[in-house]
Image (tube, rainbow, N blue to C red):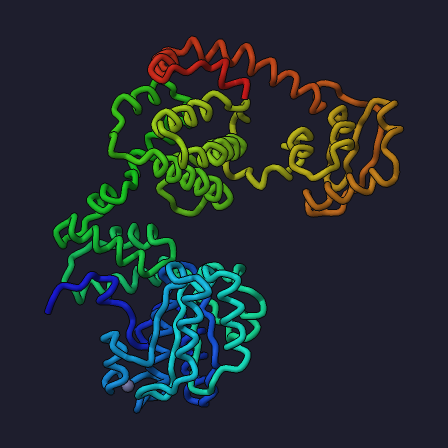
Length: 490
Ligand SMILES: [Zn+2]
């Protein structure tokens, strides 16, 4: 038998072989058992989750001479003909390449003729959203009164682009993304049958890279299997897929934790040009996110526990920096430069950290001893004007009592409407009903306006000085022609 690629060989041929779409499969089997056949179906879902495979199985089941409890027999002439793509009464069209009105009309002209040998004539139109408006209009006329021997099946990745008039005539079946566990389980079964040796980590990496698509998982597997000559090992799979090793991510986390610019320089000096900079940043961000989550359950075992003492605010900040720089990788001609600039920014803009931070006191922001009015104001949702006025305020919190202090002339500007707005935002933020009062004993050193001024000063002079005099940064900046003064203006 000739060699078949995995994705084709393991394409499901029976309902029982479909992975992860039980809700759809069961509904279709029931409709066949009850002989409640719809004349138009639309399968909606992202690429590689089984839309056209299920449509083909449904076609078999509808025409099968001896289906068993709604499942096609896969042995009769009709089933075999469909498997071999030789069933005359089944037409599969890709709307992406045949979208014009003329082509649609040609297709629809065959609709009135009775099927050659089957019960139903089935038209499967893939990527149906790609049809032109004129094509949809032509199709709609047929859908309004289809001959009883005809069934339409549509598949789409973009259901929003399908006109409502078409949708209203279809039974809509939404296919979901597969979970990593479902993909892992299926891959494990396939690899065992194909006699491919593997370790569990390799399977996890492939499943993750497939982003919910079984077909992608098999396409990736195909590549990996030939690269690893049939023996899958975690390291090889990582290399092939450009996924950075844990050690590299730990190195980067150490650099960030210690604000180690020298370490950063060394990292780039020994940079492995095969590494994908985008993947490195994404994996780093994933770890940052995991550390942040871990701080809420410090007892949970994790290989990231070395970083549990990093300040939650710093983690938030570097995650934000990563997020805002990530999008530039798509268009950047110098991903390494971009990655280095992102990491420099992460080191350079570290806020004054809370010393003696312990993860255990992290139900934190709402603990009164750690009450930080500046942060609260940045996180709650207030109108711009109110935000401006409150930037001159300080506040104290003691359990449910919150006192907001403002200069006299500013207090007068807080009318009842504003008080309501402030109260509702703060109640949401603290998740409790607060007793809020106002006075004029404002502590100027603690107002957001003052803190911002102080920080700006610090960023522009002190921090720049400190960083530019750093040996590691000097090396990096000469290598990447970077100037911290330019970064800090952003
Ligand atoms: Zn059959």
